[in-house]
Length: 82
Image 1 (cartoon, helix red, strand yellow):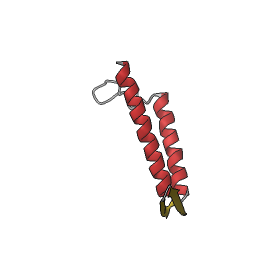
Image 2 (image 1 turned 90 degrees about the vertical axis):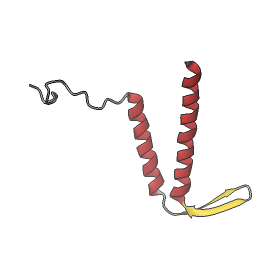
Image 3 (image 1 turned 90 degrees about the horizontal axis):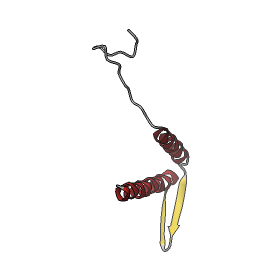
């Protein structure tokens, strides 16, 4: 018997990730490393609003908005295709 066989003798599949998922996870990890390495104070000025907070908060919010936008665009594309 091989090590891949389960207790009932069937081969276990494990988790299989597509190359697209692996690249997405790698990009997310690099983005999070970048976000948490920028912990100093930053000031965000947008029109008449001025907010001062830790830089990682602004970066994390932008990252989250980017992922949300990508998810919504991708979901809409697959929804219209089928």
